[in-house]
Structures are given as structure tokens and as C-alpha cells.
Length: 335
Image (cartoon, rainbow, N blue to C red; front, side, top):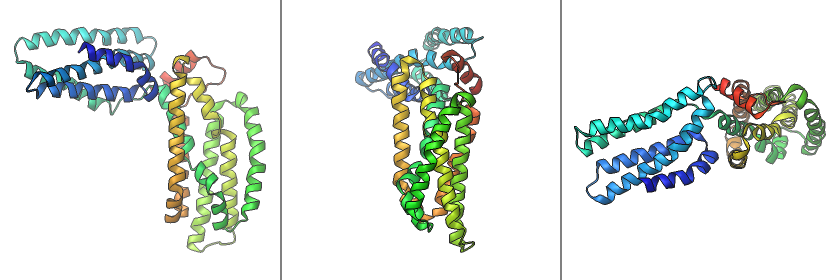
């Protein structure tokens, strides 16, 4: 078991920083369950050893991720009390095991030991992610899943199918984006990251709705003369809104919410999530567009609308605030 604990200790910090606290809790609980099951069904020493090794890895992970997770979600005025209680549970658990083990067989004791792990498995469905990771990863999902690469990679097809000159469309998008990028840089420290992100996501949602509406009108053969204009306006609103906020501000927020000791790992994870979501959008766009052009953009509008709610509910304002102040606001948000 102590050999397993050393393995868990070695990987605990990097794993917790890279995949987040909540997912690490899932993994360590699986090690606990596998360990107890191996002991319960053991018919020889090798399976008992394997079970103890697995329990040790789970315990080694717990020793780091448990306090780290609690420190990030517990209000500061009761943090010391609750963390002391949680740490004392190790002693309580050992004492209870000694008492119960005096009256039951070791295999029955292993069955009893498995119960808390199964209860934790159920509880993990309801506990929140550590707020820094939920804000960082969530922003990347919202940024990359709202249809950007569908618009960018297939803009020519969008314009052509809507009956618009793709050359004219590209020129208008390029001319529109530059002043909006400059405007965003000028306003970000005046109005804050959160305000610009909400405005940007709202504009993206509107742009997707207008683009989807243009194709919907085409499918119904209604108001055909207006549908190309709606598509052009929709694309311009979407791309302009993205340039105004969602294009760069999520990366600013991610760089501000994570402490220095995990910035590298956190940045790697957020970058990976962003690239993965971008790949999903770019890969599926052709298929979904062939299925239903209007439906495709309405789906993107729904994702952007979810992004507005996510930012409003969970993303803190980081303008002019210290890391400690940002951390305190994240804790209040999660409560």
C-alpha cells in the first residue's frame, strides 16, 4: 500500500493541475473501488497485493487533491475548521476499521470498506468542479463550440449557397473585424472582461440566428429576395462579435484566474480543449450543413446562448483585481 501511495504522490500534483480536481477525484475513487474489489474476490496473495497497491495509489492522490479541492471551494471564514475536520477523518476511519475488524472477517471488512467509495462515486455526480477549472475549461468550450470554424472554413460555401458574392462577403468581414478588435482593446479595461464577453456571445447568438433564418426562409421559399441580405448580416454580426470579445478575451481570463504554479498545466489543458472543440466543429460542419443549413446555425445559436448564461453565472470579473480577490469571487459564485 505504501508503494502505491508513493506512485499516487508522484502523479498527484501534475494530474490535478492537468485534468482538474473533480476528474482526479473520479480517478482516485476508481482506484479505491478496484482495490477493495480485488481484495474481496482474492483467491491468492497476488490479488491481495494488487488490491493494496490500488488502494495506495488512491490514497496518495487523495492526500493532495482532497485539501487542494477543499481549499478552493470552502469560504475563508470556515476553511480552517472544515479542513481540520476532513483531515481528522483519516484517523476516525482507521479507528472505526480496527473496531469493526475485531468482529468480522477480513473479506467482510473489505466489503464494508468498499461502501464509502461507492457512496463517493454517487456524490461525485453532484459536486462542482473547482471554480478555476470550471471557468477556464468552460470558456474554451463556449469559445470554440459556437461555430467559429464552421463560419471561417466554409464561409465561401455559406455565401455562395445564400446567393451572395463570396468576394464581397470576405472583404466586408475583413473591413469590419479590424476596427472591432481595436475597439475591444480600448474598452476592455473600462468595461471589464465579463461585460465584453457577454456582449460578444450575445452578438454571436444573434448572428447565428440571422444566418439560420435566411436558410430557413430559403427552405420555405419565402421572402427569397431578403434571405441573402439576412445571411450576409448574420455572418458579419457573428464574425464582428467574435472579434470584439470571444476571440481573445477568454485567453486573457484564463491567464488571470490560475495561480502561477499551475499556469502551465492549466494553459495546456485549456488549449487542448479549445483545439478539440474547434476540430469537432470543423469536422462536423459539412455533415450538419448537408443535413440542414438552418438547423446547423440554430444549434450554434443555442450554444452561444448557453455561453451568455455561463458567463453571466460563473465567470468572474478579473479587471484590476488580485489573484486572491479573483479566487474569493470564484468561491462566492460556486456557492
